[in-house]
Image (tube, rainbow, N blue to C red; front, side, top):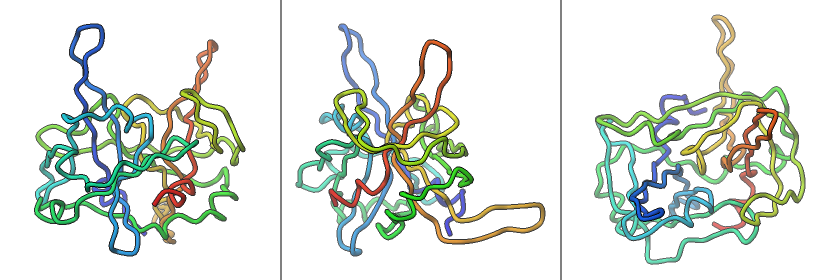
Length: 235
């Protein structure tokens, strides 16, 4: 079980300066730390976030005093190329552990065993899921304070859906919409529910990575999530 206040420390904010129609702008997204075999460490994000990266992309993460640590992505990542899933909106960035260990950070790193494909395949509409990230770039200032929201699944896994930018993958929906900046954030069941004076505890599970929002002309909106089992295919 990972408490919500601790789960805030697993995410990073990506900020990428770019030029649009001759004007300077910022592309913002979210990622989160994962490790495999306690030897390989990654930041997981959405592929449409990673596709915006350049040499000036900054990674912001939690420091020991809840301060913000900023580092250029090119200085944090390993020499390996970013791994992009061939069809799903997920990317993995292997980090240089020696550089990371010198940052004096206070991050939480999820092990890959928090991803259980059988549990994701049987997702329940009664599961309360938490998303943590940086909507519209908020959450990084004088202090490291990413935003979180809770929602319930609006669907089970839907197979082989064609999404924007050519992604073809399984997805599921959540009742509440996402917003810009949350892309790439973790969607997870933290492993506890508070009911009155009673707290139920059980293992934390990662269900997915935020893709974005589905909307139409009626004004209806729901979040679109890429199932986390795709992560296991690239790390």
